[in-house]
Length: 315
Image (cartoon, rainbow, N blue to C red; front, side, top):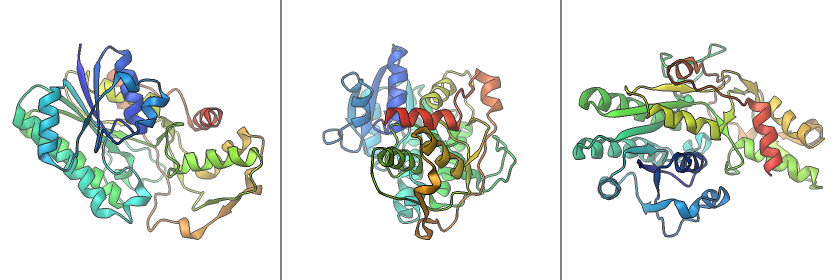
């Protein structure tokens, strides 16, 4: 029986990953900053809370990371912790950089220090690429980060690459494009749109305020994307992979799909709010996941219309 440590287990990806690994016979440990106070709502929602052993861990505290890893002795570590919102990173840039970059560095240093054969997965982000136009980004596309969040993720990515090459640590980064599910918090625009559409369909008189709806994103289904994380750590050689559907849609198309699923015309209920515009934003984001498909057979089954339909049905 393998043991996995999932840092950030209470989030969307951490919860789906815990479920997947439990199904594969793993002993699963999950961490949050205060395991005694955390509700682990997503684990409860998936019906796996009692099967996940929890530990308190602060990624920015080296001693905390060392203590937990020494106690758990995991075969695989999945680092999904850190500030996850691009929008919030503009108002909390220091917290964002520290939680992502310093947190990742602490994990790598602990693995190097202990010297045990642990495999490490780092949650990278498509935000690192910046504006790429209509050309899908792959593993060789240069990074041009355009937000504090993207800068932090790019920093963590290169830390992983450096430790892999310098110390022969099995460390991978999954460069994941946008991926959604019913477990998304309300601060994410997809959940904000789906929730508003469902409430309006149930009789609410509210209007949905959105920023720039012309942006295009490559949206996938989170429960599929965690399978790619798992598969990366099952390879013989550590490497980095883009995880995406390969297809982009505009936010306007996503809004239309959400309201269409509840039988409404989105234009009757949506207001453009200039105050929601970010200082910088990406016009188009699209990934090329062909390497993941070639190396370990991963391919996205669900595209944006399917994802939004499933989120509406789960509301």
